[in-house]
Structures are given as structure tokens and as C-alpha cells.
Image (cartoon, rainbow, N blue to C red; front, top):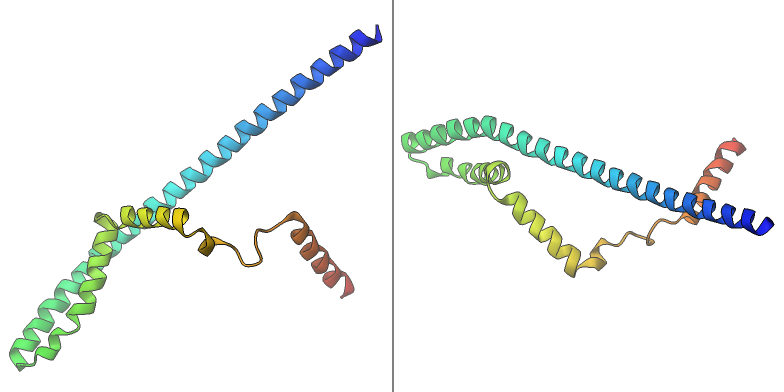
Length: 147
């Protein structure tokens, strides 16, 4: 009689463990999906910001280029044209970020770094562990208790 009862208990425990494992997996999948959704939204916001900035900066760049060119011609000083060069770099960068392939190139470079330069990604003092967090928490608790 006790054997049947313990066998049933073991089976129930096994079923409960499988259910908990499935629940944990489902929760992890949901967290990963949520993190990815937040990342995509942040990237979309960055692209939208870049496109909006490009509108204002493009207007400024156009007016500045025309004004500086006119000033260089009127005063016969080509030095007035030099500010167009750095402004052109900023304009090109913003255009590439908002409408070009900069993000794809950055993604490719990031993947290359992850594959070939892992050592540059390591945290100082290594990965954070539970023990190091507990040690810091205890030290902070003592700090607040001593006062």
C-alpha cells in the first residue's frame, strides 16, 4: 500500500517538476521577446531621431554652404569654404544613419567583434557573481548600520 502511495507521489512530483520547467522556459521566452521588442523600439526611435535631426541640420547646412560660398566669392577668400568640410561630414553621417546602410555596417562590425575579439568584451574583474553582489550588499548594509 505504501509503495503505491509513494509511486503516485513520485509521479506527481515528476509531473510538477516538468510543469515548472515548462513554465520557466515559457517565462524566459517571454522575457527574451520583450527585450527584443524594446531593443527594436529603441533602434526605431534612434533612426527617427536621426532623420528628424537631418531635416534641421540639412537646412542649416544648405544655408551655411550657400552663404559661405557667396562670402568666398565676394571677398575672394577661399578660406570661407573650409567650414563646409566638417559640416559635410556631419551631414553625410546623419544621412547614412537615417537613410543609408550605416546600421547594417555597424551590425556587421559588431558581429565580427563578437566572433573574433571576445577578449575586448570582458568585464573588469570578470563576470558578476552572486557572492560578489552579496559581499557588496553586506558592506553597504554595514555602512548604513554603522552610521
